[in-house]
Length: 300
Ligand SMILES: C[S@@+](CC[C@H](N)C(=O)[O-])C[C@H]1O[C@@H](n2cnc3c(N)ncnc32)[C@H](O)[C@@H]1O
Picture 1 (cartoon, rainbow, N blue to C red):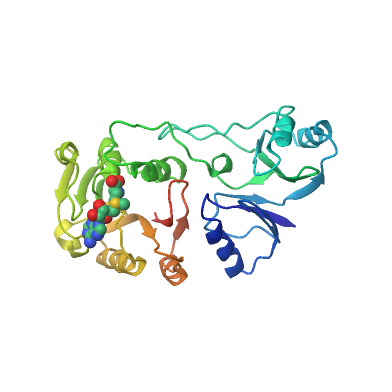
Picture 2 (cartoon, helix red, strand yellow):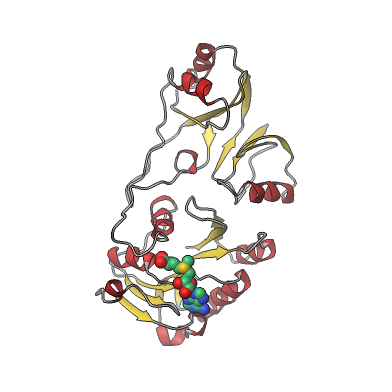
């Protein structure tokens, strides 16, 4: 059995290192695609995972399309090489579109299959793709005027793709909030936001009726002074160990229910920190499409 792992753009080295760390043997790599032997593993640095991959010969466009049509599924074509040939095959299939998402709206209903041509005469096929959106490409119809920063896309993605649903009226902390992309999302979702940053929040947002601000270090905020909160969001730029200490402090206080935190890395991934976060029961990491060299840690 083989599995394909699709690396996030420009983070191929992270996926490669993770596969090695997990003892997975890469049989063939084509650009962002890593074909490994064995069953699909839980891998963090992947945009998509294709389970039970079959390799079939491509004798002609029409024969390849006929093979795929037998599965009676729509297919996405992941085009890393042999683009034109792969697209000619797609022209003879029901295609699963890779479309922009609308914030908060339901995702495309699966299942869909995937194929890619590592060489002109071979095709990799899977009918079990793990990413909740085709190829993990969570591009949105963006709001280019209102949010004070593009960081809002990370939270849009967490809320639309990863099941993070703070409800209207929820009390939420936004740590490392400036200039205010996440606060903007949360306030417009009707949450009561306490936005904490050493830097100021964008002025209009700071006056929003659902927003209060604290201009100080997030590490000095006392859970007892804040009281109960439903969600703790953090996008603070800091070392992972420091964030972990903050998470423990808030968990130990019993004042917070759920967490969504960006864990940022400088240089190499800090696997000790990842393991320490994952030791917190019920938590998980995802590499979101809008994460750069960082991961999103979720505890709900
Ligand atoms: C990536 S930005 C956050 C972007 C924000 N989530 C948004 O949507 O606009 C990281 C923020 O962490 C803040 N930061 C760094 N150290 C901090 C600290 N000790 N306490 C609070 N904020 C801190 C920075 O001032 C910066 O605004």
